[in-house]
Image (cartoon, chains in turn orange, green):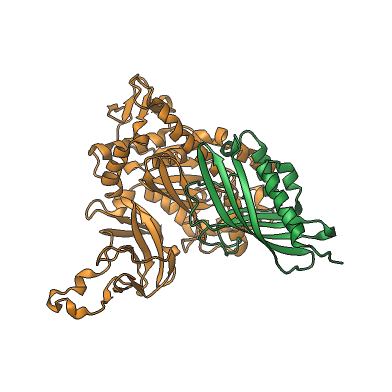
Length: 440
Length: 161
Protein backbone atom coordinates (compact mmCIF):
# COMPACT_ATOMS: atom_id res chain seq x y z
CA UNK A 1 0.00 0.00 0.00
CA UNK A 2 2.85 2.37 -0.68
CA UNK A 3 1.72 5.27 -2.78
CA UNK A 4 3.97 6.76 -5.36
CA UNK A 5 4.12 10.50 -5.69
CA UNK A 6 2.94 11.34 -9.15
CA UNK A 7 3.76 14.76 -10.42
CA UNK A 8 3.90 15.56 -14.09
CA UNK A 9 6.17 18.54 -13.42
CA UNK A 10 9.79 17.97 -12.41
CA UNK A 11 10.04 18.84 -8.75
CA UNK A 12 12.76 21.36 -9.32
CA UNK A 13 10.95 23.39 -11.98
CA UNK A 14 10.62 26.99 -10.98
CA UNK A 15 7.85 29.28 -12.11
CA UNK A 16 7.13 32.91 -11.88
CA UNK A 17 3.73 33.95 -13.19
CA UNK A 18 1.21 36.59 -12.27
CA UNK A 19 -0.22 34.24 -9.65
CA UNK A 20 2.46 31.75 -8.62
CA UNK A 21 6.06 32.06 -7.51
CA UNK A 22 7.83 28.74 -7.19
CA UNK A 23 11.53 28.89 -6.38
CA UNK A 24 13.19 25.62 -5.44
CA UNK A 25 16.52 27.31 -4.76
CA UNK A 26 14.92 29.26 -1.94
CA UNK A 27 12.23 26.64 -1.26
CA UNK A 28 9.51 29.21 -1.82
CA UNK A 29 6.00 28.68 -3.14
CA UNK A 30 3.69 31.66 -3.08
CA UNK A 31 0.21 32.42 -4.37
CA UNK A 32 -0.87 35.92 -5.31
CA UNK A 33 -3.87 36.75 -3.12
CA UNK A 34 -5.54 38.47 -6.06
CA UNK A 35 -6.50 34.90 -7.03
CA UNK A 36 -9.01 34.93 -4.14
CA UNK A 37 -10.27 38.49 -4.51
CA UNK A 38 -10.53 39.40 -8.15
CA UNK A 39 -13.83 39.27 -10.08
CA UNK A 40 -11.78 39.07 -13.30
CA UNK A 41 -10.08 35.93 -12.01
CA UNK A 42 -13.46 34.36 -11.33
CA UNK A 43 -14.56 35.32 -14.87
CA UNK A 44 -11.44 33.61 -16.22
CA UNK A 45 -12.09 30.57 -14.03
CA UNK A 46 -15.65 30.33 -15.32
CA UNK A 47 -14.45 30.48 -18.91
CA UNK A 48 -11.37 28.27 -18.61
CA UNK A 49 -12.29 25.83 -15.82
CA UNK A 50 -16.01 25.67 -15.07
CA UNK A 51 -17.15 25.85 -18.69
CA UNK A 52 -14.53 23.37 -19.88
CA UNK A 53 -13.61 20.83 -17.21
CA UNK A 54 -15.55 17.80 -16.08
CA UNK A 55 -17.71 18.88 -13.15
CA UNK A 56 -19.19 16.60 -10.53
CA UNK A 57 -22.97 16.73 -10.83
CA UNK A 58 -24.16 14.15 -8.32
CA UNK A 59 -24.36 10.48 -7.44
CA UNK A 60 -26.67 8.23 -9.43
CA UNK A 61 -28.34 6.97 -6.23
CA UNK A 62 -29.70 10.45 -5.58
CA UNK A 63 -32.21 9.64 -8.32
CA UNK A 64 -32.81 5.94 -7.62
CA UNK A 65 -36.18 5.50 -9.37
CA UNK A 66 -37.32 6.13 -12.92
CA UNK A 67 -38.82 9.61 -13.09
CA UNK A 68 -36.85 10.96 -10.11
CA UNK A 69 -35.41 14.42 -10.52
CA UNK A 70 -33.53 17.05 -8.55
CA UNK A 71 -32.65 20.61 -9.36
CA UNK A 72 -28.96 21.35 -9.18
CA UNK A 73 -26.93 24.43 -10.06
CA UNK A 74 -23.52 23.82 -11.56
CA UNK A 75 -21.13 26.48 -12.85
CA UNK A 76 -23.98 28.92 -12.22
CA UNK A 77 -26.25 27.06 -14.64
CA UNK A 78 -29.56 25.61 -13.45
CA UNK A 79 -29.80 21.90 -14.26
CA UNK A 80 -32.19 19.02 -13.80
CA UNK A 81 -30.46 15.86 -12.55
CA UNK A 82 -32.83 13.02 -13.35
CA UNK A 83 -33.50 9.40 -14.12
CA UNK A 84 -35.71 8.98 -17.17
CA UNK A 85 -38.43 6.40 -17.80
CA UNK A 86 -35.87 4.16 -19.51
CA UNK A 87 -33.84 4.10 -16.27
CA UNK A 88 -31.06 6.26 -17.67
CA UNK A 89 -29.46 8.94 -15.50
CA UNK A 90 -29.70 12.29 -17.29
CA UNK A 91 -28.74 15.95 -17.01
CA UNK A 92 -30.82 18.65 -18.67
CA UNK A 93 -30.51 22.39 -18.66
CA UNK A 94 -33.36 23.61 -16.49
CA UNK A 95 -34.47 26.09 -19.10
CA UNK A 96 -37.29 25.74 -21.61
CA UNK A 97 -35.89 25.54 -25.16
CA UNK A 98 -38.76 27.83 -26.25
CA UNK A 99 -37.95 31.08 -24.38
CA UNK A 100 -35.59 29.96 -21.65
CA UNK A 101 -38.02 29.86 -18.71
CA UNK A 102 -36.98 27.77 -15.74
CA UNK A 103 -38.80 24.59 -16.60
CA UNK A 104 -38.77 22.60 -13.42
CA UNK A 105 -39.62 24.66 -10.36
CA UNK A 106 -39.89 21.86 -7.80
CA UNK A 107 -36.56 21.29 -6.08
CA UNK A 108 -37.06 17.55 -6.42
CA UNK A 109 -39.69 14.97 -7.16
CA UNK A 110 -40.79 12.31 -9.61
CA UNK A 111 -42.36 12.91 -13.00
CA UNK A 112 -42.92 11.40 -16.44
CA UNK A 113 -42.97 14.83 -18.04
CA UNK A 114 -41.70 18.34 -17.47
CA UNK A 115 -44.16 21.05 -18.44
CA UNK A 116 -43.23 24.68 -18.79
CA UNK A 117 -45.94 26.75 -17.12
CA UNK A 118 -45.40 29.73 -19.41
CA UNK A 119 -46.70 28.31 -22.73
CA UNK A 120 -47.42 24.73 -21.64
CA UNK A 121 -44.77 23.04 -23.72
CA UNK A 122 -44.41 19.51 -22.41
CA UNK A 123 -41.28 17.35 -22.48
CA UNK A 124 -40.97 13.65 -21.75
CA UNK A 125 -38.44 12.86 -19.01
CA UNK A 126 -36.40 11.31 -21.84
CA UNK A 127 -36.01 14.82 -23.28
CA UNK A 128 -38.38 14.82 -26.30
CA UNK A 129 -40.82 17.65 -26.83
CA UNK A 130 -44.14 15.78 -26.73
CA UNK A 131 -46.71 18.53 -26.46
CA UNK A 132 -47.19 22.05 -27.85
CA UNK A 133 -50.55 23.84 -27.66
CA UNK A 134 -51.72 24.57 -31.21
CA UNK A 135 -48.85 22.78 -32.96
CA UNK A 136 -50.29 23.62 -36.39
CA UNK A 137 -48.88 27.12 -36.03
CA UNK A 138 -45.41 25.66 -36.67
CA UNK A 139 -44.60 24.26 -40.13
CA UNK A 140 -44.48 20.43 -39.80
CA UNK A 141 -41.88 20.01 -42.55
CA UNK A 142 -39.28 21.82 -40.42
CA UNK A 143 -39.08 18.99 -37.92
CA UNK A 144 -39.75 21.66 -35.34
CA UNK A 145 -40.47 19.45 -32.33
CA UNK A 146 -37.44 17.25 -33.03
CA UNK A 147 -35.01 20.11 -32.62
CA UNK A 148 -36.73 21.61 -29.59
CA UNK A 149 -36.14 18.80 -27.10
CA UNK A 150 -34.61 19.46 -23.69
CA UNK A 151 -31.09 20.84 -23.93
CA UNK A 152 -28.34 18.82 -22.32
CA UNK A 153 -24.82 19.71 -21.25
CA UNK A 154 -22.65 18.69 -24.22
CA UNK A 155 -20.99 15.85 -22.32
CA UNK A 156 -22.15 13.52 -19.58
CA UNK A 157 -20.34 10.54 -18.05
CA UNK A 158 -20.85 8.24 -15.10
CA UNK A 159 -17.87 6.75 -13.29
CA UNK A 160 -19.00 4.00 -10.90
CA UNK A 161 -22.04 6.00 -9.80
CA UNK A 162 -20.35 9.41 -9.74
CA UNK A 163 -21.96 11.50 -12.46
CA UNK A 164 -20.04 14.29 -14.18
CA UNK A 165 -20.98 16.75 -16.91
CA UNK A 166 -18.94 19.08 -19.07
CA UNK A 167 -20.20 22.22 -20.73
CA UNK A 168 -17.52 21.82 -23.41
CA UNK A 169 -18.32 19.71 -26.47
CA UNK A 170 -14.81 18.32 -26.66
CA UNK A 171 -11.85 17.64 -24.42
CA UNK A 172 -10.43 14.66 -22.55
CA UNK A 173 -12.76 11.84 -21.54
CA UNK A 174 -13.79 11.61 -17.89
CA UNK A 175 -11.38 8.70 -17.38
CA UNK A 176 -8.55 10.73 -18.86
CA UNK A 177 -9.49 13.64 -16.64
CA UNK A 178 -9.70 11.52 -13.48
CA UNK A 179 -6.43 9.76 -14.34
CA UNK A 180 -4.77 8.54 -11.11
CA UNK A 181 -7.60 9.89 -8.98
CA UNK A 182 -9.59 6.88 -10.22
CA UNK A 183 -7.53 4.59 -8.03
CA UNK A 184 -8.56 6.50 -4.89
CA UNK A 185 -12.16 6.75 -6.03
CA UNK A 186 -12.14 2.99 -6.56
CA UNK A 187 -10.86 2.43 -3.01
CA UNK A 188 -13.93 4.26 -1.79
CA UNK A 189 -16.46 2.53 -4.05
CA UNK A 190 -14.96 -0.89 -3.25
CA UNK A 191 -16.12 -0.67 0.37
CA UNK A 192 -19.09 -2.68 -0.83
CA UNK A 193 -19.64 -5.23 -3.63
CA UNK A 194 -22.73 -3.24 -4.59
CA UNK A 195 -20.98 0.12 -4.48
CA UNK A 196 -22.07 3.18 -2.59
CA UNK A 197 -25.35 4.94 -2.06
CA UNK A 198 -26.14 8.45 -0.95
CA UNK A 199 -27.85 8.77 2.42
CA UNK A 200 -30.90 11.11 2.28
CA UNK A 201 -30.40 14.63 3.65
CA UNK A 202 -28.16 17.15 1.92
CA UNK A 203 -26.00 19.68 3.69
CA UNK A 204 -26.44 22.89 1.70
CA UNK A 205 -24.64 25.93 2.97
CA UNK A 206 -22.74 29.01 1.92
CA UNK A 207 -19.29 30.16 2.90
CA UNK A 208 -18.14 33.75 2.69
CA UNK A 209 -14.91 32.79 1.03
CA UNK A 210 -13.37 31.91 -2.31
CA UNK A 211 -13.91 28.33 -3.51
CA UNK A 212 -10.16 27.70 -3.63
CA UNK A 213 -9.89 28.27 0.12
CA UNK A 214 -12.09 25.21 0.58
CA UNK A 215 -9.76 23.21 -1.67
CA UNK A 216 -6.69 24.39 0.23
CA UNK A 217 -8.31 23.58 3.57
CA UNK A 218 -9.19 20.02 2.57
CA UNK A 219 -5.68 19.34 1.23
CA UNK A 220 -4.09 20.76 4.37
CA UNK A 221 -3.36 18.36 7.22
CA UNK A 222 -1.31 21.08 8.88
CA UNK A 223 -4.38 22.95 10.16
CA UNK A 224 -5.96 19.94 11.84
CA UNK A 225 -4.36 20.16 15.27
CA UNK A 226 -4.67 23.91 15.89
CA UNK A 227 -7.99 24.46 14.12
CA UNK A 228 -9.78 21.37 15.44
CA UNK A 229 -8.36 21.26 18.96
CA UNK A 230 -11.84 21.11 20.52
CA UNK A 231 -12.83 18.20 18.29
CA UNK A 232 -9.64 16.32 19.14
CA UNK A 233 -10.34 16.96 22.84
CA UNK A 234 -13.80 15.45 22.40
CA UNK A 235 -12.34 12.42 20.61
CA UNK A 236 -9.86 11.87 23.44
CA UNK A 237 -12.75 11.60 25.91
CA UNK A 238 -14.11 8.70 23.82
CA UNK A 239 -10.88 6.69 24.08
CA UNK A 240 -9.66 7.62 20.61
CA UNK A 241 -5.96 8.02 19.95
CA UNK A 242 -4.88 10.12 16.99
CA UNK A 243 -1.65 9.56 15.18
CA UNK A 244 -0.62 10.87 11.80
CA UNK A 245 2.45 8.68 11.49
CA UNK A 246 3.01 7.73 7.89
CA UNK A 247 0.41 10.14 6.55
CA UNK A 248 1.05 11.39 3.04
CA UNK A 249 0.13 14.23 0.71
CA UNK A 250 0.09 12.99 -2.86
CA UNK A 251 -0.08 15.25 -5.89
CA UNK A 252 -1.93 13.64 -8.77
CA UNK A 253 -2.26 14.67 -12.40
CA UNK A 254 -4.73 17.28 -13.63
CA UNK A 255 -4.88 19.22 -10.38
CA UNK A 256 -6.19 16.37 -8.25
CA UNK A 257 -4.52 15.48 -5.00
CA UNK A 258 -5.05 13.24 -2.00
CA UNK A 259 -4.19 13.19 1.67
CA UNK A 260 -3.64 9.75 3.12
CA UNK A 261 -3.93 9.10 6.85
CA UNK A 262 -2.44 5.70 7.51
CA UNK A 263 -2.24 6.02 11.28
CA UNK A 264 -5.74 7.41 11.54
CA UNK A 265 -8.32 6.00 13.91
CA UNK A 266 -11.71 4.48 13.41
CA UNK A 267 -13.55 3.95 10.14
CA UNK A 268 -17.13 2.77 10.48
CA UNK A 269 -17.48 -0.80 9.24
CA UNK A 270 -13.78 -0.99 8.41
CA UNK A 271 -11.63 -0.15 11.43
CA UNK A 272 -12.94 -0.29 14.96
CA UNK A 273 -12.40 2.32 17.65
CA UNK A 274 -13.86 2.44 21.20
CA UNK A 275 -16.40 5.11 20.23
CA UNK A 276 -18.14 2.55 17.97
CA UNK A 277 -19.13 0.29 20.88
CA UNK A 278 -18.23 -3.34 21.64
CA UNK A 279 -20.97 -4.79 19.43
CA UNK A 280 -19.31 -3.34 16.33
CA UNK A 281 -15.95 -4.93 17.04
CA UNK A 282 -16.55 -8.41 15.71
CA UNK A 283 -18.87 -7.14 12.97
CA UNK A 284 -16.06 -4.92 11.70
CA UNK A 285 -13.64 -7.85 11.68
CA UNK A 286 -16.15 -9.92 9.69
CA UNK A 287 -16.62 -7.04 7.24
CA UNK A 288 -12.90 -6.80 6.57
CA UNK A 289 -12.59 -10.57 6.22
CA UNK A 290 -15.41 -10.55 3.64
CA UNK A 291 -13.72 -7.63 1.89
CA UNK A 292 -10.42 -9.54 1.75
CA UNK A 293 -12.21 -12.51 0.20
CA UNK A 294 -13.56 -10.22 -2.50
CA UNK A 295 -10.58 -7.97 -3.32
CA UNK A 296 -7.57 -9.74 -1.76
CA UNK A 297 -5.74 -9.20 1.52
CA UNK A 298 -3.52 -6.35 0.43
CA UNK A 299 -6.21 -4.25 -1.20
CA UNK A 300 -8.61 -4.95 1.68
CA UNK A 301 -6.02 -3.62 4.10
CA UNK A 302 -5.60 -0.48 2.00
CA UNK A 303 -9.37 0.06 1.77
CA UNK A 304 -10.08 -0.70 5.42
CA UNK A 305 -7.22 0.79 7.38
CA UNK A 306 -6.22 3.99 5.60
CA UNK A 307 -8.26 7.17 5.50
CA UNK A 308 -8.17 9.50 2.55
CA UNK A 309 -9.36 12.89 1.46
CA UNK A 310 -9.41 13.11 -2.33
CA UNK A 311 -9.75 16.32 -4.28
CA UNK A 312 -10.99 15.93 -7.83
CA UNK A 313 -10.37 19.13 -9.78
CA UNK A 314 -12.24 21.43 -9.78
CA UNK A 315 -15.40 20.95 -7.72
CA UNK A 316 -15.38 17.64 -5.82
CA UNK A 317 -13.96 16.60 -2.47
CA UNK A 318 -14.33 13.00 -1.37
CA UNK A 319 -13.87 12.07 2.27
CA UNK A 320 -13.06 8.44 3.00
CA UNK A 321 -12.48 8.94 6.72
CA UNK A 322 -14.58 7.90 9.76
CA UNK A 323 -17.40 7.72 7.24
CA UNK A 324 -17.78 8.58 3.57
CA UNK A 325 -18.80 11.95 2.21
CA UNK A 326 -18.82 13.99 -0.99
CA UNK A 327 -18.64 17.76 -1.06
CA UNK A 328 -19.34 19.90 -4.12
CA UNK A 329 -18.05 23.45 -4.49
CA UNK A 330 -19.96 26.04 -6.49
CA UNK A 331 -18.38 29.49 -6.84
CA UNK A 332 -20.89 32.32 -6.68
CA UNK A 333 -18.66 35.38 -6.26
CA UNK A 334 -14.93 35.70 -5.57
CA UNK A 335 -15.74 35.86 -1.86
CA UNK A 336 -18.77 33.57 -1.75
CA UNK A 337 -19.18 29.84 -2.41
CA UNK A 338 -22.12 27.49 -2.20
CA UNK A 339 -21.40 24.04 -0.80
CA UNK A 340 -23.45 20.87 -1.12
CA UNK A 341 -22.43 17.80 0.82
CA UNK A 342 -23.72 14.27 0.97
CA UNK A 343 -22.95 11.32 3.15
CA UNK A 344 -22.33 8.07 1.30
CA UNK A 345 -22.51 4.53 2.59
CA UNK A 346 -21.91 0.98 1.41
CA UNK A 347 -25.19 -0.14 -0.15
CA UNK A 348 -24.92 -3.47 1.67
CA UNK A 349 -24.49 -2.36 5.29
CA UNK A 350 -26.84 -3.21 8.18
CA UNK A 351 -29.24 -0.63 9.70
CA UNK A 352 -27.13 -0.62 12.88
CA UNK A 353 -23.97 0.19 10.95
CA UNK A 354 -25.84 2.88 9.01
CA UNK A 355 -27.02 4.51 12.23
CA UNK A 356 -23.54 4.41 13.73
CA UNK A 357 -22.04 5.84 10.53
CA UNK A 358 -24.46 8.77 10.58
CA UNK A 359 -23.74 9.49 14.26
CA UNK A 360 -19.98 9.28 13.92
CA UNK A 361 -19.57 11.38 10.78
CA UNK A 362 -22.17 13.89 11.94
CA UNK A 363 -20.18 14.67 15.07
CA UNK A 364 -17.35 15.94 12.87
CA UNK A 365 -18.54 17.15 9.51
CA UNK A 366 -20.98 19.74 8.24
CA UNK A 367 -22.24 23.13 9.41
CA UNK A 368 -23.55 21.65 12.66
CA UNK A 369 -20.62 19.32 13.35
CA UNK A 370 -17.95 19.89 15.98
CA UNK A 371 -15.22 20.56 13.41
CA UNK A 372 -16.42 21.97 10.06
CA UNK A 373 -17.61 25.31 11.50
CA UNK A 374 -14.01 26.03 12.50
CA UNK A 375 -12.89 25.33 8.93
CA UNK A 376 -15.53 27.76 7.70
CA UNK A 377 -14.24 30.30 10.21
CA UNK A 378 -10.78 29.78 8.69
CA UNK A 379 -11.92 30.35 5.07
CA UNK A 380 -13.88 33.40 6.07
CA UNK A 381 -11.07 34.87 8.16
CA UNK A 382 -8.63 34.41 5.27
CA UNK A 383 -11.04 36.10 2.87
CA UNK A 384 -11.46 39.07 5.21
CA UNK A 385 -7.77 39.15 6.14
CA UNK A 386 -6.27 39.21 2.66
CA UNK A 387 -7.95 42.54 1.97
CA UNK A 388 -5.26 44.02 4.23
CA UNK A 389 -2.48 43.48 1.72
CA UNK A 390 -4.36 44.21 -1.52
CA UNK A 391 -2.24 46.20 -3.94
CA UNK A 392 0.79 46.24 -1.66
CA UNK A 393 3.78 46.31 -4.04
CA UNK A 394 6.37 45.08 -1.54
CA UNK A 395 7.71 41.61 -2.33
CA UNK A 396 5.95 38.69 -0.66
CA UNK A 397 3.43 40.86 1.19
CA UNK A 398 0.32 40.26 -0.93
CA UNK A 399 1.26 36.60 -1.40
CA UNK A 400 0.21 33.54 0.63
CA UNK A 401 2.95 31.10 1.58
CA UNK A 402 2.47 27.47 0.55
CA UNK A 403 6.07 26.30 0.92
CA UNK A 404 5.74 23.90 3.83
CA UNK A 405 7.53 20.63 3.15
CA UNK A 406 9.49 21.80 0.09
CA UNK A 407 12.76 21.19 1.91
CA UNK A 408 11.84 17.54 2.51
CA UNK A 409 10.52 17.18 -1.00
CA UNK A 410 13.73 18.61 -2.49
CA UNK A 411 15.65 15.89 -0.63
CA UNK A 412 13.49 13.31 -2.33
CA UNK A 413 11.47 12.43 0.74
CA UNK A 414 7.75 11.78 0.36
CA UNK A 415 5.47 14.66 1.33
CA UNK A 416 3.69 14.29 4.65
CA UNK A 417 -0.02 15.03 4.94
CA UNK A 418 0.92 17.89 7.28
CA UNK A 419 2.91 19.46 4.43
CA UNK A 420 1.47 21.60 1.65
CA UNK A 421 2.46 19.49 -1.36
CA UNK A 422 -1.14 18.69 -2.34
CA UNK A 423 -2.04 22.37 -2.29
CA UNK A 424 0.96 23.18 -4.48
CA UNK A 425 -0.13 20.55 -7.00
CA UNK A 426 -3.56 22.15 -7.19
CA UNK A 427 -2.15 25.64 -7.73
CA UNK A 428 0.28 24.53 -10.46
CA UNK A 429 -2.54 22.98 -12.42
CA UNK A 430 -4.82 25.94 -11.79
CA UNK A 431 -2.08 28.28 -13.00
CA UNK A 432 -1.49 26.16 -16.12
CA UNK A 433 -5.20 26.22 -16.92
CA UNK A 434 -5.58 29.95 -16.40
CA UNK A 435 -2.47 30.74 -18.41
CA UNK A 436 -3.68 28.45 -21.20
CA UNK A 437 -0.80 25.98 -20.99
CA UNK A 438 -2.94 23.08 -19.75
CA UNK A 439 -5.75 21.59 -21.87
CA UNK A 440 -8.50 22.32 -19.31
CA UNK B 1 -50.19 11.36 38.73
CA UNK B 2 -49.54 13.56 35.72
CA UNK B 3 -49.30 17.24 36.43
CA UNK B 4 -51.21 19.55 34.09
CA UNK B 5 -48.92 21.93 32.30
CA UNK B 6 -50.21 25.21 30.97
CA UNK B 7 -49.09 26.98 27.84
CA UNK B 8 -47.88 29.85 29.99
CA UNK B 9 -45.54 27.50 31.87
CA UNK B 10 -44.23 26.17 28.58
CA UNK B 11 -43.75 29.69 27.25
CA UNK B 12 -41.84 30.63 30.39
CA UNK B 13 -39.63 27.58 29.85
CA UNK B 14 -38.97 28.46 26.19
CA UNK B 15 -38.32 32.13 26.96
CA UNK B 16 -35.85 31.15 29.68
CA UNK B 17 -34.20 28.76 27.20
CA UNK B 18 -33.81 31.62 24.71
CA UNK B 19 -32.46 33.95 27.40
CA UNK B 20 -29.86 31.42 28.59
CA UNK B 21 -28.65 30.80 25.04
CA UNK B 22 -28.56 34.49 24.12
CA UNK B 23 -26.45 35.07 27.23
CA UNK B 24 -24.25 32.05 26.39
CA UNK B 25 -24.99 30.59 29.87
CA UNK B 26 -24.44 27.12 28.48
CA UNK B 27 -23.84 25.17 31.70
CA UNK B 28 -27.16 26.33 33.09
CA UNK B 29 -28.74 25.66 29.71
CA UNK B 30 -27.50 22.06 29.70
CA UNK B 31 -29.20 21.63 33.08
CA UNK B 32 -32.54 22.09 31.33
CA UNK B 33 -32.05 18.71 29.61
CA UNK B 34 -32.93 15.34 31.10
CA UNK B 35 -29.87 13.06 31.04
CA UNK B 36 -30.45 10.94 27.93
CA UNK B 37 -32.11 13.77 26.04
CA UNK B 38 -31.24 14.64 22.43
CA UNK B 39 -30.73 17.76 20.33
CA UNK B 40 -31.42 17.57 16.61
CA UNK B 41 -31.53 19.74 13.52
CA UNK B 42 -32.55 17.98 10.28
CA UNK B 43 -31.36 19.12 6.87
CA UNK B 44 -33.48 21.63 4.97
CA UNK B 45 -34.30 19.17 2.17
CA UNK B 46 -35.31 16.26 4.46
CA UNK B 47 -36.96 17.85 7.51
CA UNK B 48 -39.06 14.80 8.32
CA UNK B 49 -36.59 11.99 7.77
CA UNK B 50 -35.59 9.57 10.54
CA UNK B 51 -32.11 10.57 11.81
CA UNK B 52 -31.09 6.91 11.92
CA UNK B 53 -31.39 6.79 8.13
CA UNK B 54 -30.68 10.37 7.11
CA UNK B 55 -27.89 12.91 7.34
CA UNK B 56 -28.75 15.67 9.83
CA UNK B 57 -27.07 18.95 10.62
CA UNK B 58 -27.14 18.01 14.29
CA UNK B 59 -28.04 14.70 15.89
CA UNK B 60 -26.61 14.84 19.39
CA UNK B 61 -27.20 12.27 22.04
CA UNK B 62 -26.73 13.58 25.57
CA UNK B 63 -23.01 12.78 25.52
CA UNK B 64 -22.35 14.61 22.29
CA UNK B 65 -24.51 17.52 23.42
CA UNK B 66 -22.40 17.75 26.58
CA UNK B 67 -19.28 17.68 24.38
CA UNK B 68 -20.78 20.42 22.21
CA UNK B 69 -21.29 22.60 25.28
CA UNK B 70 -17.76 21.91 26.52
CA UNK B 71 -16.46 22.85 23.07
CA UNK B 72 -18.48 26.07 22.85
CA UNK B 73 -17.12 27.18 26.22
CA UNK B 74 -13.54 26.75 24.98
CA UNK B 75 -11.65 29.67 23.50
CA UNK B 76 -10.56 27.18 20.83
CA UNK B 77 -14.10 26.87 19.43
CA UNK B 78 -12.91 29.29 16.77
CA UNK B 79 -16.21 29.58 14.93
CA UNK B 80 -17.73 31.05 18.09
CA UNK B 81 -14.72 32.82 19.56
CA UNK B 82 -15.63 35.55 19.97
CA UNK B 83 -19.23 34.46 20.45
CA UNK B 84 -21.84 35.60 17.99
CA UNK B 85 -24.43 37.94 19.35
CA UNK B 86 -27.78 36.23 19.09
CA UNK B 87 -31.35 37.29 19.79
CA UNK B 88 -34.08 34.69 19.67
CA UNK B 89 -37.72 35.46 19.12
CA UNK B 90 -39.86 32.50 20.16
CA UNK B 91 -43.58 32.65 19.49
CA UNK B 92 -46.75 30.79 18.29
CA UNK B 93 -46.38 28.28 21.11
CA UNK B 94 -48.69 25.27 20.99
CA UNK B 95 -48.93 22.19 23.19
CA UNK B 96 -49.31 18.73 21.70
CA UNK B 97 -50.98 15.73 23.27
CA UNK B 98 -49.00 14.45 26.24
CA UNK B 99 -47.84 10.85 26.32
CA UNK B 100 -47.38 10.13 30.01
CA UNK B 101 -44.84 12.66 31.23
CA UNK B 102 -43.67 13.52 27.72
CA UNK B 103 -45.24 16.63 26.26
CA UNK B 104 -44.75 17.69 22.61
CA UNK B 105 -44.35 21.43 22.26
CA UNK B 106 -44.40 23.44 19.04
CA UNK B 107 -43.22 26.99 18.51
CA UNK B 108 -41.90 29.30 15.83
CA UNK B 109 -38.46 30.85 16.11
CA UNK B 110 -36.56 33.64 14.44
CA UNK B 111 -32.93 33.89 15.49
CA UNK B 112 -30.71 36.79 14.55
CA UNK B 113 -27.03 35.91 14.62
CA UNK B 114 -24.69 38.87 14.43
CA UNK B 115 -20.93 38.60 13.91
CA UNK B 116 -18.19 40.03 11.73
CA UNK B 117 -20.46 42.67 10.24
CA UNK B 118 -23.06 40.14 9.13
CA UNK B 119 -26.63 39.74 10.38
CA UNK B 120 -27.85 36.25 9.59
CA UNK B 121 -31.40 35.10 10.15
CA UNK B 122 -32.42 31.57 11.01
CA UNK B 123 -36.15 31.05 10.85
CA UNK B 124 -37.94 27.84 11.66
CA UNK B 125 -40.01 25.89 14.10
CA UNK B 126 -39.35 24.00 17.27
CA UNK B 127 -40.73 20.50 17.62
CA UNK B 128 -39.58 19.76 21.14
CA UNK B 129 -40.60 17.01 23.51
CA UNK B 130 -40.50 18.15 27.13
CA UNK B 131 -40.40 15.96 30.17
CA UNK B 132 -42.93 17.02 32.80
CA UNK B 133 -41.64 14.56 35.39
CA UNK B 134 -42.20 15.84 38.92
CA UNK B 135 -43.99 18.92 37.59
CA UNK B 136 -40.71 20.32 36.33
CA UNK B 137 -40.12 21.02 32.63
CA UNK B 138 -36.95 19.76 30.97
CA UNK B 139 -35.94 18.89 27.43
CA UNK B 140 -36.30 15.28 26.39
CA UNK B 141 -35.89 16.13 22.72
CA UNK B 142 -34.88 19.55 21.49
CA UNK B 143 -35.60 19.70 17.76
CA UNK B 144 -35.16 22.77 15.58
CA UNK B 145 -36.46 22.56 12.01
CA UNK B 146 -35.30 25.31 9.67
CA UNK B 147 -37.63 26.81 7.07
CA UNK B 148 -34.62 28.01 5.08
CA UNK B 149 -34.09 26.28 1.74
CA UNK B 150 -30.33 26.47 2.20
CA UNK B 151 -28.09 27.72 5.03
CA UNK B 152 -27.38 30.95 3.25
CA UNK B 153 -25.83 33.44 3.45
CA UNK B 154 -24.74 32.35 6.93
CA UNK B 155 -23.59 28.75 6.56
CA UNK B 156 -22.84 27.51 10.02
CA UNK B 157 -24.77 26.17 12.96
CA UNK B 158 -21.83 26.68 15.29
CA UNK B 159 -24.23 28.18 17.84
CA UNK B 160 -27.25 26.39 19.34
CA UNK B 161 -30.36 26.68 17.19
